[in-house]
Image (cartoon, rainbow, N blue to C red; front, side):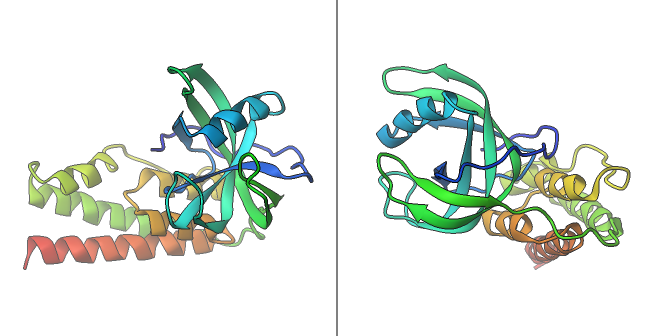
Length: 226
């Protein structure tokens, strides 16, 4: 659902009257590209309102329930996104490309009338301390090796390997931006991506990434060497 782009952009002030919200069964990280196909009536009503203002809305993870119809349980940490492109795609439908801007925290949900809105605040990282990338790089190397041992016919291994094709370096950039980019680059599940998004600073975000990769490495070793 998400693609890759440049990493977090400065946020302009958030509206005190409530930000339009799009709960999803996926996590969007700051800096990622998010393609969306909009067809549900409440969102086809929301998007023109968003385009008429600053093009921004919030995305939060649906922790329980469905993307369609409401009645869901929503996370209180999400991402403000901005519409980069949009095109009509048939009667009552449109396709969007959005870009993740920055982490937000929901302070209160407003009535879904006619679409979800919430009072939110910007949720920047805490002070940046020492950031060490060696652990992530070592785990990337382990995953590459395990994928090579498993061959190319396994769909899960192909999916994991596709995230590891490019050589990367995170140490030269802004730690906040690079920690989100590292998570976006890697084959993390939804719960792990949400833990990464909610981590309060780059060091603890890296800890969350490394923990997720340790679990993945252990699962692959068990699978390949029962």
